[in-house]
Length: 151
Length: 151
DNA sequence: AACAGATAGTTGGCACCTCCAACAATCTCG
DNA sequence: CGAGATTGTTGGAGGTGCCAACTATCTGTT
Image (cartoon, each protein chain N blue to C red):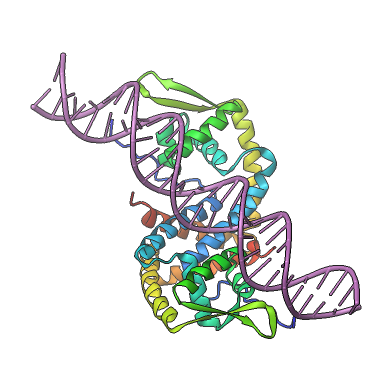
């Protein structure tokens, strides 16, 4: 019986926390697909973008700024350095630190990623008007600001 | 120099897709903490709740309705059946199917979970007014509706 | 009635992500 | 100087979403 087979399009009574997860899954599907042929993952973009905006940073600062765990920063920077998208030099003023800087090739790669991801955002938020997208971003930022900052 | 050490509270220029992930991480942290002492995970709640609202269902329908993969449904139902929160009986009308039903003990457990998770939602969305929470849910539902339904 | 194709449940595995614990090296501050 | 904190690194844990394969069963067509 293929009649309705409505199979409840989900989310009828899902908790906000579940809705956030489903939305994140959608987001990841779309963005991962967009990045598939670039050899880069989401973390690569996040760090490249942060380096481009904030300038050279230590790995610890990168982690705090992006909420990526220190160990993940290490591995991701390894990848980026291997492809010559960033350089990692010891900080003479604090020999514990590495100063990570984006290279010209890194900026070029970042431009490619940004283009792909911008399109992905548009696809993800296709159902929302520009105002609604702004609202969503605002609300998400507020949720993150309170609920997440506690560590 | 501990001056600012602002370490950029993140999310200044994060993509919507990244914001969704960060919000989902916050949501999962809070909900996992809430469920910690119950022996149940998020999927257990999702399936129990769905069974309570929709009545007995096949595992395939549960998966479609909740967007949980079939293999995950199998494992989660295993757990729930082991704790006598659901029963799994073959469907006489279609011997491929299992009819999964919530038990009285399951409903009792569900009430416990629901209480904990309701509090968790309040904590997660503490920064938003009631209207804003509604708006967030609406926008997320629309995002999920378009971007996710494609498989 | 018989066959092709779809569906159900199960199992196993993969990839990513988030988080944590430990460690040596180094810095900071009293 | 010495206690405590911080940095980068390594290793591992657990959860999640996803996919492929397999058997059993149903459906629709001829």
